[in-house]
Amino acid sequence: MGEVLVVTSGKGGVGKTTTTANIGTGLSLLGKKVVLIDTDIGLRNLDVVLGLENRIVYDLVDVIEGACRTKQALIKDKRFDGLYLLPAAQTRDKSAVNPEQMLNLCEELKEEYDYILIDCPAGIEQGFKNAIAGADKAIVVTTPEVSAVRDADRIIGLLEANEVRAPKLIVNRVRPDMVKRGDMMSINDIIDILAIDLVGVVPDDENIIVSTNRGEPAVADNKSLAGQAYRNITKRIMGEDIPLLDLESSQGFISKVKRIFKL
Amino acid sequence: MLFDLLNFGKKKASKDIAKERLKLVLIHDRANVSPQFLEMVKGEIIKVIQNYMDIDEGALDIQLTKTESEDGENYVPALVANIPIKKVKDSGK
Ligand SMILES: Nc1ncnc2c1ncn2[C@@H]1O[C@H](COP(=O)(O)OP(=O)(O)OP(=O)(O)O)[C@@H](O)[C@H]1O
Ligand SMILES: [Mg+2]
Image 1 (cartoon, rainbow over the protein chains, first blue to last red):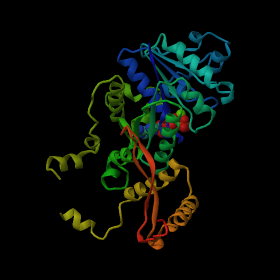
Image 2: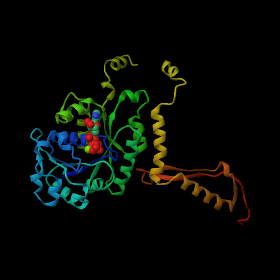
Image 3: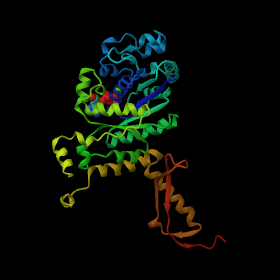
Image 4: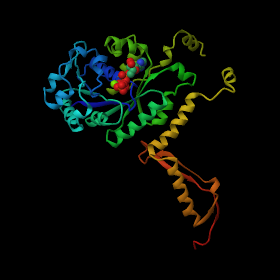
């Protein structure tokens, strides 16, 4: 029996789709069977982040409406064994799907796959309600900014009200240099405010843009620091106890020298 | 030490301002109340208590904050009132 994880944030543009693509790919690299569902109907993006946009035939709404079998709509990623994408419909709107239908779909997929990851749209309306309907657990993505943390808090409350228990936090786009000079909230500041468990920290990394340009998730790139962060998060999701990434080691020569001399 | 000296007289770190603002805004988000609502509660509390004791209205402090829930796993909003008493009336006897 698989597990359904919804990736959500409230605020738009904080990294839900990037997170879904990377954790999903990461799980498949560790031998798991994974389906990624894009529930951002009308604004689909998970397909391009994964580089699978040219292979779409059917989509989520086709499956829900019974226009095709679930299996027919799943795009198998040829690079990563065990990774499948169920894309969102691009020319419909969120009312084409309801929470009960999503729940049924998740139950069906759980029979056969180890993890079902749901990429949630921004906001707290219908799209959010659909995305969380079948979720066993939630991953809340935020960035170290006042508005993103505030929205994350709202989402945590709504998840609780909808009985999606014990959400876990990812803090994305952290800039250690700014944290160091006191111009960005630290991980501890954010945890202190949101009072939920942390599952990982992802640095602000230009590799994310490069890998999105190519349609190849950073998690598969051994040289990318963000990729390392996503590999660690993947393992933590699978229950391993992995220490947090030392983001400071990424700060280049000067800070390395400073560290050597204990500055 | 040198670092501290250099920072002396500098403005407060922006992340500390962010944190303080967030904490305040979340108290209201979480409890779903406005400052006007708090003023109303305050007025009512004063009215009731004044039937029994003289209080220092100017020093009365009432705020919404958070406290650990019973299972210790979450934080829940709490209404905390600090009401200095000047004199207890004996009409209650
Ligand atoms: N760690 C990171 N470092 C640098 N850029 C990042 C990082 N994470 C995300 N981005 C960039 O931020 C932008 C938004 O990311 P993404 O699309 O994943 O957010 P989202 O939460 O899914 O947005 P939406 O709410 O619109 O669905 C993208 O351009 C992405 O490349
Ligand atoms: Mg998205």
